[in-house]
Length: 297
Image (cartoon, rainbow, N blue to C red; front, side, top):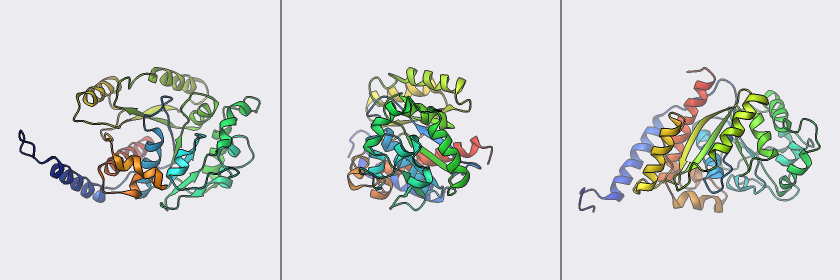
């Protein structure tokens, strides 16, 4: 027991988790009136980008939205976490980018989530940067394929795209296809390092190739609110970016880290843990923003 406050920290966490579960079970998720394409981007590695993509997608699916996850990172970690095949030779995002397949040809059903579809990434995608240089409409390959899919494919409310940790041609393709950008920000030293370059890139793309593109959301990840550092980083991000960061903050969680090794998101691996509940709360917030962006609600 905490001798100062008289509160058992474990009991307090259990009580908070219970309150969150009750709130989430009673909540209605927002649904955009037209599909929204959300690029999850940050060229800085280790900030929880892929983890954020798959867990928000899974949580949106639990909330009743129909979600397509596009894995645009050659490492294929999002594909692994969602339990879909992404071995050599599997039709993938690479085939879509080079024009040898449509999204409808490569999309797989997530085995654990009936509302989640996945466009997997294979190691082939690592060569796409070079091949794109000589292709027509090289910045618009994903945008053109996405437009076709959303017009004629299965009904989808949200597309979540896991970008590679770079600002190359694949990321450029994703940003040209996206309506908005969600940036995960780790609550550690140098959290804002490199963000100016990303924000500058997004501004240039919105000024030339995709006028609808905007940074709509930031999500603070891997937080330990018991430490002064996490608190200071959170305050700094909120001071710089106002209403863009979600109110929900994702805590450090062993369960969140374990889930991908079982080919799952934390939402299906342990939906009662603090990390899963945090991602569900973040997804609820995100759903309201997506609904508002399409003028509904």
